[in-house]
Image (cartoon, rainbow, N blue to C red; front, side, top):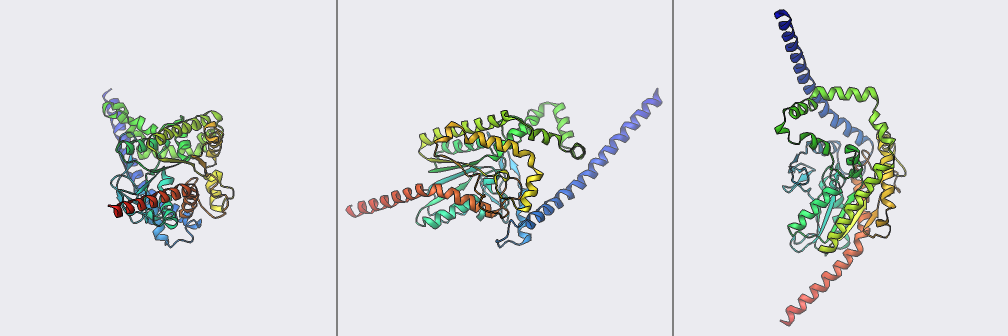
Length: 399
């Protein structure tokens, strides 16, 4: 009996040592694999021609994408997370978690016409320099057309944020009496992704991870489970499973019916209604832009065809969700809802570097479309500003 017990203990010890050594070995491997993978992926992006016409060197482009991977998040009440401050060469994030925006029209922040831009990583403009994000491009267009206007554009975009997150962001600004004049929402992608992840519309992106972590300090079982599921060995096993079973979960996704897509659309419409009620209460103007994705682009470049094929399993859910949004009765006669999913239909050049993120050329096109809808309102604001200035001058003269 003692011999058997001793043998079992030795066997258990040896198994633990083997697992421990494998964990360390895989950790070293994944460290270098992930690091090299960033540059390898960036080289493919460079080869696609998405940065053609810019003054960026290959090393600059690699730096942009390395900085993206280096970005970290910190806890934020009600939103789950926000950006940690970052002072990169091309990606600058302030202490308040917002990305740096080029504001050539800004003369005085206290009296400026405020434009808030909300969205996920596409509004943040992953893959672009600070000066070439969607908000920065929009700000430059405003300055070119209305050089005398005092305008401040703020980029509230954050990776993974959905319309629910963005509504909360806006409400928190309103509570602090930071009232905008114009609010832009740029949505569609994360509403579908988060619903797919959680199999439920309206939940935050990566909510299933927060669910796993909930009350973990009070549960040994949860701690052990989290330790296992975040280990390098677990990552290796799940990677092998996906390769062997050829992404059966993705096949299931492409075969989904209308129910989830209908829920996604209803949820999006519900949050749009909420923002409209805030618009009426606080007097700002809302623009709800339905964003493009690779499935909505008419002519794909060779690189984009590869991205499309790699993630074609999302196409069905995106198509159904967007169709349900478009035909909703709320949006049929609503001038605040603007479908710009066709923003890239007139170009054959490479716009995307995955299924939804665009390069700087794409950001310019999106900002251009947005500006066409903002321009009449900004022209009115400029007239009001000129009129007020004249009135103030006359008042001073009369005094």
